[in-house]
Length: 264
Image (cartoon, rainbow, N blue to C red; front, top):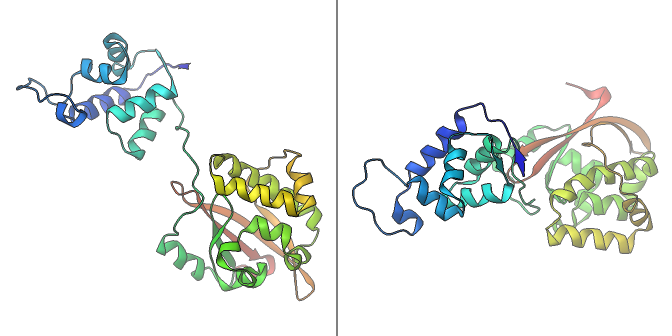
């Protein structure tokens, strides 16, 4: 629980507006007779949220009181907030976004697929939190060999540790692979409740001693960005690479590799 100083009127206005847009029938209460003001009363919201009227009144007034994430989740349920409104409530009252479950299997927006294709001749692909390759263009397929594997097996982390051809393509694989694994750990933490992400880790621990050794080092790095040497026709080529969030709600990232001597 945190005690915060609320100097902005946004929390007061937001809670009042969301309370006033609901009717008693919306929250399972008996239909009310004519009211002087629209929506639910403060005492009704307080009772439904399981707190005292005085405490809820102080919250709506923006007073300096402690609020927990559990209470804010409960209040969001009572006020029937959607995902965007729930996040807004947390930012106003808790000064940080709520914890949200990570999603691994997601649909790639059609515009994102077009963008991946349009980025050619640069290699580009879209991954989710589990690093499943959900979309890629021809330069990426040539560079990483995605086409050598069926769609269900196109997982960047799996290929990094189980595909001998991809391993040989990376110059200094033993330096790059643990760094990429340390970057993956951040995404794994976000998807910690996802059974498919856990299954991937279990699989790689069984089949790759290198993965098992490096995974248990507990290294964590920032996002993968910088330069990387990859062999093309036996010759090392330098690529700049970076990742961009393209759908925060779906936890999708666009990864782009641009050959250093082929900039536009």
